[in-house]
Amino acid sequence: MATLTVGRALIAMRPWSFTVTLCSVALGSALAYRLDGRYDGRVLALTLLITVPVHAAGNLLNTFYDFKRGCDGHGSSDLTLVKGRLLPAHVFNIAVGCLCVSALAMALLATVSPLAPRKQLAVYTLGVLGALTYTGGPGFKYRALGDVLIVLTFGPVLVLFAYGVQAGALSAAPLALTLPPTVHVEAVLHGNNLRDMHEDSRSGIRTLALLLGRRRAEQLFVALVLLPFALVLWQALTVAPARGAALLALPLGAKLLGAVRRGALTDLPRKTAGLQFVFGMLYVASLLLQNPSNRRHRNRSRRPAAARGAKERSAMGDDKFDGLYMTVAQQAGGIDPLFDSFFGFLRRKTDFFTGAGDGSKAEATMTAAFAKHGKLFAAENAEKEAREAKRRADEEARKKRVAEEKAKQAAASAPPQRFEDVADEAVKSEPSAAPAAAADDGAPAADEESKGAKPILNGGITDKYRWTQTLSDVTVFVPVPEGTRAKQLAVCIEQRSLRVGFKGQPPIVDGELHAKVKADDCLWTVEDNREVSLTLQKVNGMEWWKCVLVGDPEIDTQKVEPENSNLSDLDGETRQTVEKMMYDQRQKQLGLPTSEEQKKQDMLAKFMAQHPEMDFSNAKIC
Image (cartoon, rainbow, N blue to C red; front, top):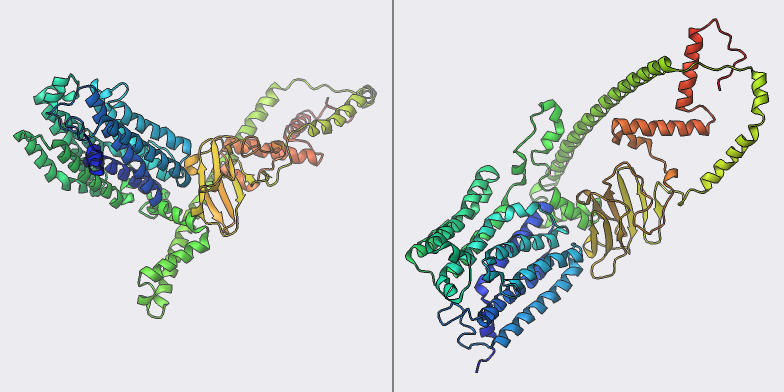
């Protein structure tokens, strides 16, 4: 009678194939660190605890359903059930146990990962469905669709999951870099099907290898082994030389192809999985070692050197560690703690102080660096001010031309003016005095009907946070207990939602944003270890928000007072409109004519100057 033991259970899981999962998870985590500067060891450990059991469950269910369908015989590569080492119930129950372990790890991941739990669950569900439906349910393996399913599951889906739980967002950006290792994933499966062509044909299973035939199937296997090497060679020549590190696995590929030529296919899947793992990890290492500035040398602007200025100098590598520094700054919680941490690192891990003698050399190094970047800042600021001055001059010239053209058009098309005696006008105007007064009395009533509280710094205060805004961004301040560090918080900023809280606890702030934001441009930090400051970049830079989260108290946006100093951030046409509105508002408050009224008066004065023969002393314009 079959006895369930740990050793037999492990053999049934086919652990040699787990290298595919390990490689994809490592790739996704490396891309999160490389592209976003985000990495958490706890998240990586839980990701492996989630994905490896799902992989094991998929292998066990493959054994279970192959046996139930009569696909496995004594000549099959998997003899777990054929020789009675385990019972079908054993295999199925172990698979269910693996899925339970994975689900428990998913629950833990939600407490430490910055990615929204619903997004974690969505990608996780895709992966589990891929493992279950390979032989279960529709049984894509038996319909010659198993290759497509496995490539998608262990390639883009798994890498995207590992990337998202680290970076806190799902993005298509890392998918383009998954192609070389993913091709080797297909090589592992195709090698398995190539070896099992005889048994699969006998059992009636349709695989890609059977559809192609022995000769073409072997040719496809050779292409699948060599194509990733060709891809990394192209990347090394055109993107970054470091990508060529994966070429070190080429001797393993050559041995594998030699085995295929000799017809030694018994261990082909295992050896292919070994090649995939070595190649994949070298590829991951090449991504981590790559100099980010290499990506900036392509498609560089051909502007004159004077126009590039300090910004061009910055592109030479000044910002290559920005992602890393931003992560450190967020964890430190402020400028002073950041400097304290940095100099602590220099003291503990370098000879910055011990090799500086009396300290004058270290001080000179810091002074030189400060002076260098002070000059760069001054140059960048001067360029910015020069561009702004030119823009203002161009805008003023444009306004002048537009005003002159409008004046000419108005003078040419102005209707004849009607003049009446002042005395008669006074009599005629008496009946209308009461309605006018009523209209004046109605104005305050209309103002009283305006909805929302009066803005405080163009924002407001709720029971959980306070906020301010400009036309381009919203700043939210969430108070937290004193001594709070960034690593204790779980902050998730998405295009239409915001969540702020402590890891493993209910969120402090959670809801739908009033309008869309540019999630990739939003930042947050902990100020003075007692307040979380979030800067949200608006998608619509011409809209004042009534509130931050839908359902929270609203402000009256008609009472918002835009800062004059921020008008320079607007485009020419928008700035002209805002300035005109602000001018008219001030004129009304002072009891003076608005811009339109002033224009009419100027036109009348011009008309009077052109017709001195007319007497305007007792005339009034209606």
